[in-house]
Every structure is written in C-alpha cells, then in structure tokens.
Image (cartoon, rainbow, N blue to C red; front, top):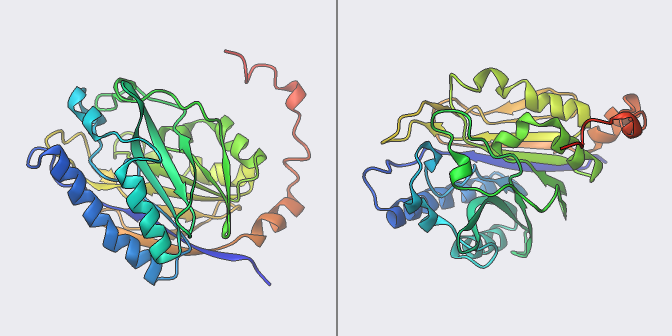
Amino acid sequence: MSRITRAAIIQAASPSAAELSLPDLKQAMIEKHLPMIAEAADKGARICCLQEIFYGPYFCAEQDTRWYQTAEPVPDGPTVKLMQEQACKHKMVLIAPIYEEAMTGVYYNTAAIIDEHGEYLGKYRKHHIPHCHQGFWEKFYFTPGNLGYPVFETSFGRIGIYICYDRHFPEGARELGLNGAEIVFNPSATVAGLSEYLWKLEQPSHAVANQYFVAAINRVGTESPWNMGEFYGQSYFCNPRGQIIAEASRDKDEVLVADLDLDQIQEVRDVWQFYRDRRPESYTQIAKA
C-alpha cells in the first residue's frame, strides 16, 4: 500500500503597508490566512505550509527599524500559539514562517513546525541571507541561521525546511537529504525579472539530486509603497524525479493541494544510487570558509 501524504501550500497577497498600521497589517494577514488554512484542511491536507513571513508584506524592500516591532519569540509568541491551536483544530501539521526575536536586537527569518496535535516540534532558521539587490535588504533584519538543517519526524512524513534565498545553495539541500527529509518546503518571497527564470530550475534540481519531494511557495501581487516588482506566485509541488505535479496560479491567492506518494522516494533511489556513490572525502573545497 502506497504511503501517500496530502499536502497543501498557501500563496497570498499582502495589503498595502502604506494604508495600515503595523499591528493592523499583521492582524489582517493572519485573519486572511485562517480561512485558507481551514480550506486546506477541508481538502484533506495533512501538512500545510505558509509563505515566507506570512503575516505581513516583504518588508525587506526598505531598511527601517520599525519592522523589528513585528518580530516575536518562537515558540512563545502569540502567532505560534495561534498556529498551535489551528493545527490541533484541523488535525494538520502546520509550518508557519515568521519573523523571530531571539533576544533584544537579534532576529531571524524562521519557520515553526507544529504537529497535528498542536505540539511545537521545533524551528528552522534561514541560513543564507541576501543583501545583493535593490529591495532585498535582508542583512538589515536577519541574523544567519544557526540551528543546522533539522528534519522533523511527523505522522505524515519527515519534513525539512529551506527558506527563499536558501534555494540557491545546493549544499543545504543535500544536508536535508542526508538528514532524512522526504518533503522539503521552501517558503519564499521572490519577484519577476530577478529570479523567475530560476524558479522551476533550481528546486526540481534539488528534488532530483536529493531524491525527495519539494514544495515551493511564493507570494503574489505587488506590495506598496515599494512596488519592487511582481511576486509571481506559481507555487508548486515537485516529485523526486523533478516533475512538477501541481502548480498554482501566477496572480491570485490560492491553496494548492497535492498527493505525495512517499514510496516514490524508494523507487527512485533504487534506480539512482546518488547517496551510495557520493565521495565526501574528495570534496575538499565545499566546507572551506
């Protein structure tokens, strides 16, 4: 009997940061996501992942300390507590990417993982922090992640997380595979004209090289007052053969659901022995600073 997990990913547009206070903006995005989480559950999803820093706009389009006010402790902040309630209510594993305050003045781009009973399983902190293009000023906001590449054991599969810019680095994607990931979720905020040509190249390549499922999430719309470009959506699920098996629209809020046959991982690894044939002792440059 196949081991099939129905998973959901959510893409959504943010209200204007020019029209709402930060608390109202945050609350509006949380309230927008609650019925979408419920929709995922109604469609039978057992795992659901939200987009990068789901409760607001992509504020890294500017450098302003006011956004520090939106960070919360993980797991003891109100948003993670609310997501624990939602996970328990819907009997669904939830991955909630938020802005984490670890201590005064130290912040991370983080995803909290919560099981279907509402138990907090742990968190992943984004490792690779860009500061290289107009409107991607992430080093102003985020400390590089320091928790490694954990994989979380759930009733519906072993879950790894990679966040947005991480996807450009195959080293961490391989670490997740070596740590036993069966599904890797990548919540993102990425715009047309910059990364779109890579969107359906890199992550299917990670799926093939590491022989696991990938779920790629991107928000939609343009976000004022910055208008740094169009977040082009097209969230998708990819199987271990690199095939996109479900894809969301480019320009609208959407809950995308797909059935992931986790037995395909064994099937693919029976054919391609990438883990057996690795030569880590010969990779002399990869881990050098």
